[in-house]
Length: 198
Image (cartoon, rainbow, N blue to C red; front, side, top):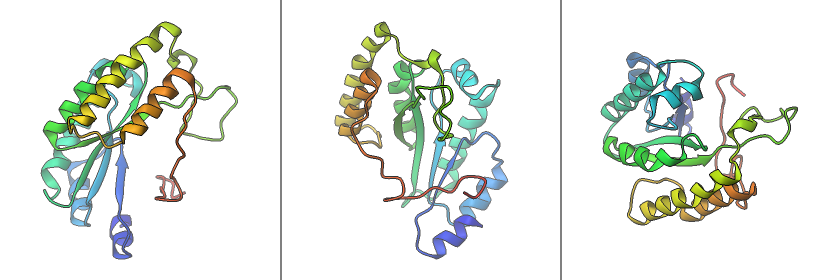
């Protein structure tokens, strides 16, 4: 209903989903309503790590099954398929493999660095959490350059990386220093509606 209503008013609609609980019937209904863009959350191809991220066992197969369903069911032209990959120390080294996997399925990859709260009482943003174990140690920071050098190369090679090279460089800096120099466009270029309607 949301897809149909917003598209009838001239808005581009992109469904953002973890794809865990989607049925094939629900995907068909979205496609029939005119869905032209979908972003599915998948941070790694490593099943055990993905289980840990999702806090339960077995989500990887469900997500990948629905990635394939979207790529098969959506029209081949005028459609935007993307994977949202949140980069963290647990997933970063495998990101180039994820990009190759996405390319085979016809997806772009949006690379977003994990945002961690500095304070355990900081709870004004539900997308940022306090997880000190996920912070990079000084030794782990060293791998950031090798991974991001490869990502910049892949972008230059024409691999399906949705973010810009300046964004990749800003992400590299963020991982190493905690500072993110680029502004956020939320509310200016787009808006999001969460599952609760907010």
